[in-house]
Length: 117
Ligand code: 5GP
Ligand code: ZN
Image 1: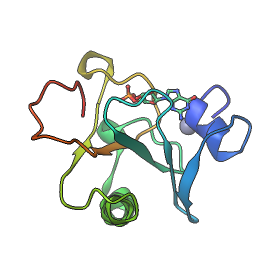
Image 2: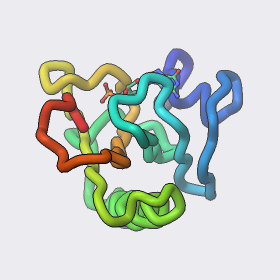
Image 3: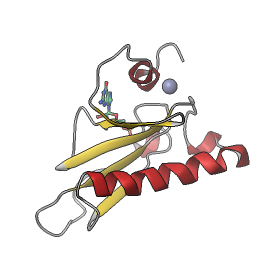
């Protein structure tokens, strides 16, 4: 989609630190991390958010979670990580291209203070 930041990252029209990519998904570092490790799991297909998915997206959504787990291993946060999704502006969604936040790397027990993490 023309104005979508994540579509631009996928098309390399905007720079990002890409950690993983395949035909369906891209994973890159969050420009504004709220945890020691914070990457975004993003489908290449422009789907606005979870409100828009259908059963046709079932395999893609499953793959997002499997890739999140693989990324947690790669980024060495497999012992303690969180996956977050903001769905809709009032839930804090700011980029309207569906994505999962994968966060981790805390030195102490997570205390829930980190918004959306
Ligand atoms: P949301 O607020 O929609 O749940 O998450 C959007 C996330 O995208 C935010 O955490 C924000 O930091 C990140 N973000 C926004 N613009 C860019 C960008 O241009 N590059 C990268 N790498 N992350 C971005
Ligand atoms: Zn997009």
